[in-house]
Structures are given as structure tokens and as C-alpha cells.
Image 1 (tube, rainbow, N blue to C red):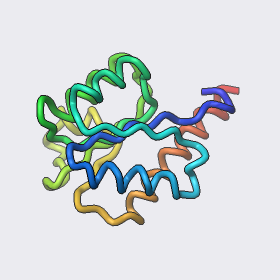
Image 2 (image 1 turned 90 degrees about the vertical axis):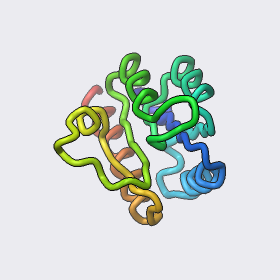
Image 3 (image 1 turned 135 degrees about the vertical axis):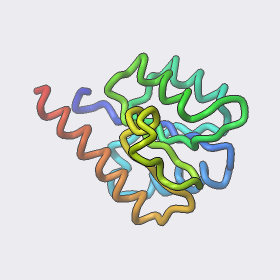
Image 4 (image 1 turned 180 degrees about the horizontal axis):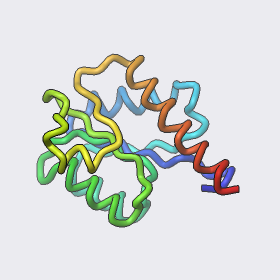
Length: 137
């Protein structure tokens, strides 16, 4: 990632209110200058965005009409192995016994979530990409 390139972050949820709130929050966070935020409410549209834009970060609901967040994560990992994957769900956090899911994601966000937790996650993502960028110089 070059110095001028923003971290491309795709937020996916079929609940329009969640997508709008997360998009607004990302625009207002102190790390906002580091991100280019794309939002989507459907599996099909998200898959198209992944294939065409190859985002750096995917934050997706686990359950979507027409597909799942896990399928989106798999699709993104196949074209961008270094992508940062965050799964959101109202379900309990996946246990370490669910290796298939745990091995595919970098973070889990249980809904409803507090925005300070979301801010911590965004700060962690930004730091992760900044560290990779400085190491590649």
C-alpha cells in the first residue's frame, strides 16, 4: 500500500440503519482520513465490489439474504490474502472449537455493539495497515 492510498473498507449488512450508522461513524472517527469507505446492503452487490475493487478490509454481517458473510470473506481472501476480515453477528462469539470460522476472520463484532468497541477495532485496523506500510518501505 502506498503512502497516498487509503485503506479501502467495505461494510456489508442487510440492515440499512447499521450500514448508515457505521458509514457515518467511520467518516467521523479520527482515523477517517486513512479510510475509503464503501457500503453495501446485499450479498450480490458486495461480491461485485469485492471482485472489482478488492477492498483491504471487509466488515460484514454473518447472515445475508442470498449468501453469507463467510462466503464474502472467502471470496475476498482468494483475491486479497492480506485483507482484514471482521464478522458481525448477534450470535455469541464463535468458539475456538469452530476452527473453520475462527481461521477465516481477524476480528468478531457482536451486535449490538458499542461504538467505543468499534472505534478500538478501527484503530487496530489502521495500525495494522500502517505497520505493514512502514515495513514495506
